[in-house]
Each structure stands twice: as C-alpha cells, then as structure tokens.
Length: 234
Image (cartoon, rainbow, N blue to C red; front, side):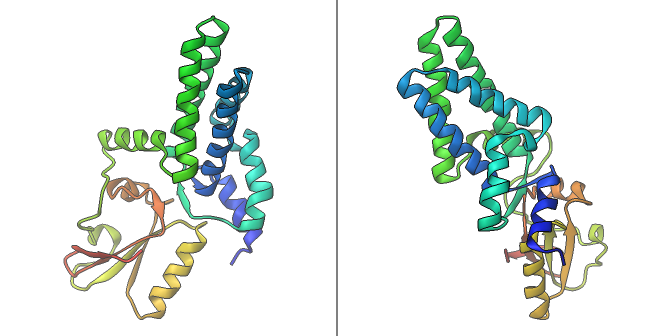
C-alpha cells in the first residue's frame, strides 16, 4: 500500500478526481479576494482572481496558486480529504472566471455598477461555497449532466449481471477509485464483517459511474438477490 505522500501525489496528478477540500480552499481565497475588491473598489483583484481560475481550467490545477498552496502546505498537514468528481468544481471555476473577467471588463469600460454587481455575485457565491459547502456552479453542472444522461439521486437498483455477479444472493456494491484511501478502509471493514463486497472501480467503469450518478467515492449500497437497493451503507 502506498504511503500518504505517494497517495496524495497520485491523487493530485489524477485530473478526473480531486481532494474535496481543495476546491473549498480555492473558494475561500476567491471569496476573500472578491469581497476585498468589492469593499475597497480596487477591481484589479477581480482580474487576478479571474485569470488564476482561467489558467487553472486551461492548463491544469498545477498552475492554480491557491491549489498549489493547498496541496503543498495544507494537505500534507491535514491529510487527503474525500475524493470527488473534479468536473463539477472545474465547471464552477469556468463560471467564476467568466464572471470575474466580465466584471473587470465592465470596470474598464466604465460600467462600474455592472462590475460591482458581478463582483458582488462572485463574492457571495464563493463565500456560500466556502462556509457551507454548497457550490452553486457544481449544482448547475449536475443539472446539465442529468440533461445529458447522468442519472442523479438515490440508486434504486443495480444490474448485478453487468458487474459480473449473477443474481441470487445479496451483496454490498462498493463504488471505489484506486487512489481513494477511504475506499480501502470501507472495503476492509465490510469484508471483515463477512459481507460479500462487489467493487466497482469508477476509473475503469465510467459507464457505470455515469449510469448510477456516482460522483463521490466511496459509495456503498446494500442490494438484495435481485439487485434492488435496500440500504445505503456508506
């Protein structure tokens, strides 16, 4: 088993997932910066924040200074947090960059009220995400994903045949990712209890992750002999 440092490095290099604490840390930085810009009228702060978000979206999180600080300083001290699908936070960053850069352009063009409104909106939404975990941009992404065919909500039934398990006995279906430390812990706990565990690696079975709307791992559900979900275990 990889040590914590190796695990963190692997997670940070896998762009399909992200330590859930990293986007929240980034949102905190954006919230503080946008609030300062709105309160003082020093709008270039909005430009810097917008450029940072745009660069991280276009070239990767290794070019996002708040993200680098989190991965290099915060994460080694507090450990790797739960993993989540990186597409929602990335979409939120795209929206944030658009609003911040639009606010900057409005200030440059002399539309101070428009710039103030856009900057204030970013400050409020980023503060909401940082303090409560509610990421509006991520929620917008989920709506778009559902329209495109990603099913959200609770899993009601699992096709055991598609997992290589024939119907006839109950089991716990555990959605995992090879870089998810919590997934390994949950699997050991369940197996230690004598539970039949069917593991689904979402990095290899993205079709099943999309089908069942799995965006965060570990996710474990108890199914009966027919594949009907009877309870959520994790």
